[in-house]
Amino acid sequence: MATQQTRGLARTMLAPSVFVLLVWMVVPLVLTLWFSFQNYKLLSAAPVRFNGLTNYYYFLTDPVFLGALINTLVLVLSVLAITVIGGILLALLIDQPMFGQGIVRILVISPFFIMPTVSGLVWKNMLLDPVNGIFSHIWRFFGATPVAWLQTYPLFSVIVIVAWQWLPFATLILLTALQSLSEDQKEAAEMDGANAIRRFAYITLPHISRAITVVILIQTIFLLSVFAEILVATQGGPGFASTNLAFLVYKIALGDFDVGGAAAGGVIAVILANIVAFFLMRFIGKNLDA
Image (tube, rainbow, N blue to C red; front, side, top):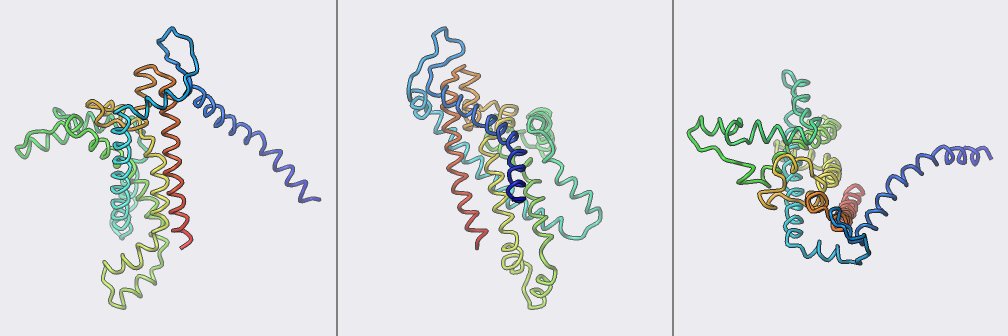
C-alpha cells in the first residue's frame, strides 16, 4: 500500500512537468504539420487555404533541395571525421603528463563554450577575411596570394568552423573514457612487447569505442541542424553552395515568406533526422551490447 501511495505521489508531482513538456513539443509539431498543408504566404493577400501535398511536392522537386541534402550529409560526415579523429589524437596528447597540463586542457576545451554566432564572426572577420584576416597575413608573409575562403571554398570553410567548435566536445568525452583505462593493462601489454600502435589498436581503441559512438550520436543530432555558422559566415552562398536543409528552410520561410513551404521542409528535415537517429541508435545499441 505504501509503495502504491509513493508511486501515486510521484506521478502527481511529475504530471505538471510532463504536461508542459508535451504541450511544448506537441503544439509546435501540430502547427507545423497544419501549416505544411496550407497555401500560406506572409506577403500574399490571398486567404490561407488547404492545398494538400503541394508544398511537399515543390520542396522535394526543388533543385536546391538535392544540393542542400548533399551539403548536409557532407557537412555532418566531414565534421564527424575531423572531430572523432582529432578528438582521439588530442585526448591521447592531453592524457600524457606535461607541464601546465591543466591550462592546456582548458585552452583545448574553451572553443566549445563560444556561441555559434560569435564563432562564425571570429572566423569570418579575424581569420578568413582575404584582406585583414590572419590567414591572409600568413599567405602574404610567404609570398602567396591570399585566398577568399568563404567565397572560393564556402562549404569547406563552414566545415572548418563547425569542426573547430565541436572538436573540444569530442576531446572531452574521449579524454574521460581514456582516463578510465587501467594502467595495469597498458603496462602488461608493454611488458609483452607490444609497441605503441598495437597498444592503441588492441587496448585503447576498444576501450574508448563506446565513447566514440556516444560522440557520433550526440554530434550528429546537432550537426543536422547547423544554422548560425552558415547564417553569419556565408549566408548559404555563394548561391546555394553552402546551404544545408536547416538554412534552406530558413530561406524559404523568411526569404520567400512562404510559411507553408518552410513548414513542409521542416517536416521533411525532421523525418530525415529521425531516420538517421534510428539507424544510429541501432548501431550504438549493437556496439554497447557487444
